[in-house]
Each structure stands twice: as structure tokens, then as C-alpha cells.
Length: 539
Ligand code: XMP
Image (cartoon, rainbow, N blue to C red; front, side, top):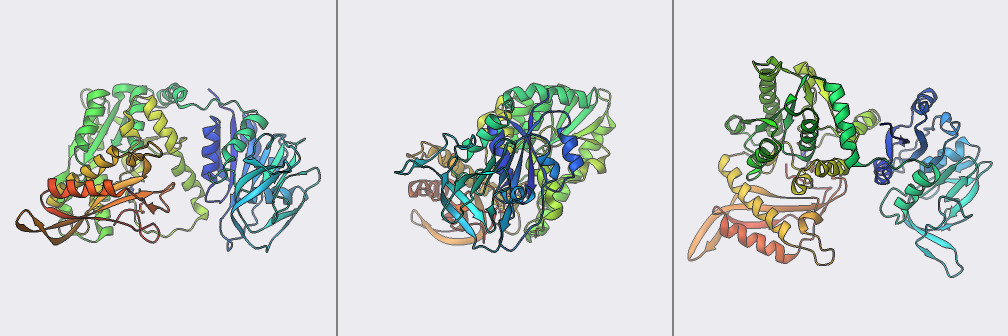
């Protein structure tokens, strides 16, 4: 099935992916590509007639980074609607004959925008009306330059006191632009505005629905794989689990999952993964208990980066040796020729845009990049087009339990980065039990106002093992035992995060249960550091 689509050209804003997520939430397929694609590329992309609209994103949210990037001129020549956002509005104005001026004081934060001129984009969309009856929108602004003269054919669509041209439109050509950011949730009507653009103005068919996507994905996987065999590294995380369930739906026993248990998983996690995939889904799963190997190699190593490298390296070795056995085949199989991975769309966008971005390595993330080449296998990535929320929806539609699909993220090196310093089996055993209590109580406690559990109100929560001893008193006796720290954060992107203001009653219950139930721990602390300057994990 061919989906109609929206093209989002990325000028480097931190929030471009949010534009794509809002469009997908309107059930419209869209893709993000770098802004410097050529005119020929754009025409080719539109050639099948499925492209219904284009959105030009904002640019870097920094005063220090100026850009002179332009949209390919073809964008304005295809006869389809275009929406410019922030820098996207400025380049649209500039390229179509208007004027943009720089050097203004940066405007950053909330603004009240007055809608003008009754354009199709804003009609009927407002937060409140002034006593004079003007429709007003509460929006998020973040810009230095601004449009000071409309291009020929455009009319004024929105304004604020400090930004007289905060929106403009040439409705005959279907060109719209706003200086503010409709993709962020601070702009209350932002989702409505983007939905109006893609459904009302571009008239795209809203056919991007995860329940329906299963059959489409199944067909694609069957076509790609034929009668060959596939292996997949199952970690118990959301992405690899959903990929496994989807591929299993498509090709059944042609899929073999390899589940490497490095001994640094959460309480009962290995059994849960086996129960779900081997037990309920009847998928072929090979469980490799490599905990002795991992813990053996980690003995005596306390430096965080060294630990990460050992865990990542061993993981690849174990997986490779299992894969080699499967690749070689046996009496009942011809051997695997595909390696499946749970790569999702943000990874694809980031690696596409990575050329232009400079980043410092704070932590070397554990991943298995390069494996397909080393193994001589072809790659199967059935989640490449999906955002995390869509992966979760798909998981539920495939019948995976919501508790599994909506679980907090868990790092590849597992408890290895949550036991500070040297990793020991005793420490891991204590930590697993303490952590399970914390998670259980987060699921038990509800916030009255929202009705949600504290597990759902936090983005990630876990317990950290501190290899220091402190003195306590229990009954009549003195204790001299270990300390754990509870960590719970709220974040939308994991790049920045606030520590969660958990209710005291919850903290009290968790602390008392851990100290009473986990002999060996006599003190519980709560981590009140935000990211930055702290990171989410302690190592
Ligand atoms: P930090 O600690 O860098 O973590 O603030 C940000 C997010 O990344 C996760 N994380 C990892 N995930 N492999 C992973 O798959 C890793 O090596 C790794 N290190 C950190 C962390 O749990 C948080 O969600």
C-alpha cells in the first residue's frame, strides 16, 4: 500500500523530530530529510504523486550559530502546499522576495499571537479572544531574526507586539508560515494547527495507523526475506521485542532469537523474556547464560568506560559465536542470512543528520553497529520508519503486554552501570531486589490529580548500588551495610532531565521496604540532581 506523505526538510532545529511526530499523530506518513537535498532530489521524491505537502523546520536554537541554508527552490515550484516554521518562515520569505532582518534581540519563551486575516490555517483555532474579539494563540517563540517585509502575494496571518509579522500566507499557492513553534507542546494549539495543515490544507489521507500497518509490514518482511532465515538479538527492551514479535508474525520459525543473559538484568527479567517469546509467542529463542563470562571479565575493573567496553565487546563476541552456529545451519535449517535489528526512525534521522553535528562523547553507548558486515549477513530493520510511540502502539497491536511495551528504557550494559565501581555478583543480587521494590511501589502509588501511577509519571526510574557501608541500628543491634540511591527522572528526550518530585509517602514506603526486606542494605537515599550537570545513569 502506498501512503500519501509529507516531506519535512530539516534545517537543524533541536525539535524537528517533534514536527514529524505531530504529523504522524494526525495519522499521516511523513519523512525528515536534510534541508540541503537538491532540486532534482525533491522533484524525484514528488514524482509518484504521493507527496502532498512540505514543511520547512526551524534552525539551531542558538544565537551563536547562524545559518544561510536555503530550501531547494523546487519546493516552491511543485504546486503543493508548504509550511515554514521559524527559520523555515524566514527562508521562505527571503527566497520568495520578502525581507528578513537579523541582529534583533532574541525572543525566547511564551508569546500571545494575534491571528489576522482569517486564513484557512488558523480559522477557528484560538486559545482565547480579546475583549475586542481578536482571536489569540498562546505560542512558544525562539528566534533572533525576523521577517520585516512580506514577499509579493503574501498577506499577514499573525502578529505580536515585538514581532509584527509572526505569520504570513499566500493562500492561492498554499504557502503558510509561522514564526513560532507549533510542534512544541508549549504552543497549545500547535497540534491542531499542524493537523489543519496536513489534513485540511494538504488534504492528505490519514491512513498511517499502527493496527493496519501490521499487515503492510508483514508483507514487506515476507517479500524481503523470502524463504531465507533470520537471527535477532533479543534484549528484552522495547525495540528488539517489538521487532521480534513483528518478524515472528511474518515468518514464524524462519526467525531465531538469541537472548544473551549477561547476568546484569533486572529481577526475573530473563525468565519474563523467555516466557513471553518462547512460551506465549512460540518463537524460537536461544537463551545464552553468559553471566559467569561477563562477571569474570568484569572482576577488578572499576572504571566506567572500561566496564562499558568490556560488556559491549563480550556481548558482540557471544552474539557472534551464536550467530555463526546458526549461520552454519544444521540438519533442520539452512542457516541464517539476515540479521534483524530494532533500529527506529530517530536513529535513522540522527545518522543522516550526524554529518553536520558536533557531539562530545560523554558515555560510549553500547550498541552492536557494524555487526552485519562482520557476520556477512544482510540487514532486516522492520521498525526503521517508526517513532518510539509508534513502536509501542505496534507492540500492543501485536499482542505484547502493555507493561512490557511501556517499560522505562534500560541501558545495554544493564546493572553494570548501576553498580558503581567494581561489579560483583553479590552487589547485583542486592541491587536487583532493591530495584524491584522501588519499581513495584512506583506502580502501586497513584497521583490523585492525574490518576496515573508514578511509574507512568516518570520517564525512567531505578536503583543504584553504592559500594560504601554505613552504620545503622536494627532491633537492638548495630548494622554496617551498603547504601542504595533511588533515581527517578522526568524528561521528553533524555538529553535533559529533571529529578522527579516523588511523594514523600512513596519514598518512605520504598525506603522502609528495602531496608527491611533486603538484608545487606541499611540506608536509602534519593538522588536530587538534574541533567545537566548530572547524567541520568550514575556511570
Ligand atoms: P545518561 O546517563 O547519558 O542516559 O544521561 C541517557 C539515557 O541513555 C540510557 N543509556 C544507555 N542506553 N546503552 C543504552 O542502550 C548504554 O550504554 C546507555 N547508557 C545510558 C540511559 O538509561 C538513559 O535512558
